[in-house]
Length: 423
Image (cartoon, rainbow, N blue to C red; front, top):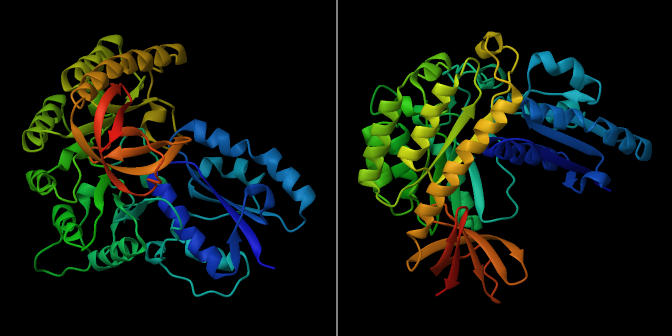
């Protein structure tokens, strides 16, 4: 009888992609997927960008003890992005810990015979269901933003060879995946490491190459850094076709001094000009951002600049986070901590502005025909999907629409989604 494994992922799309590669290793050494309470091995893939994620992982300790009481062979392993300072805490609840770049060595930890790979990005991802697939084009980061642990947990930037990326995507399209996400901590920095002194394949060129792969699928990517979002990339996005009209462009703060303290080397004027430039080329662009409230020393006046930015840019979506200090980062040593209550208030104020601008943007779709990919169900005969612009859409139909491209007329809108009628 095969041993069973369960992978629990805390984090972003990159973490989910990493988990798919870990699943490949486990299945090649004889494990099969199962629910957590039936697993012999639980692998936790975590992101420690926020303290809340660390606390959730530590909270699994009691559950693991119950599993060990029922199954003497039970084993737990931690991987992903975790800081050295948290290691002693994690060692109390996990049997083993392994860096994300070393998941190819899971077989050694589990005493199984399997040929390891030095580069975990060379491991084929196990993608078994759904319409979307995540393809990392690079890992690591060179930017050292003052609040971020990624350069310490993942290391410096490493790009994958274009041929490997193209090969993986071709295989995913052949399997029937309809939405391909190109992932990286900063996709703008991508450069094919296998090219010589001739033409370097950068991210815009990679986008074009992926769009030329035969098949009916969409291309999305995340995340982009404003400091090196080039005119060439704007032109590549404007080609359309398989390249969708969605952009996540993290601003992180709406005030120049706060941005400088964050080690984000651009100004709000630069950011706004960039948004203007992209929207001029892609009028139907859906724009989202990431922003942190309550960064050390952020005054109420500086926060007011973030509110002004939200009103001026009119984002479709924003991922608003309350600042939490991460040991080892530059910001953890900064003075001027903002009280939790004030952070919560600031998050609420930004969210209220976002609700208004998102609703205003979504109402423009009423009466229009849109293309969407159905990715799930909400209830009986109610389907959930994403438009090409990455707007959430709800469709009622007795037909099985799962994993299919559909066309719908938008009949109503809310701040967070569109309601459509199947055409």
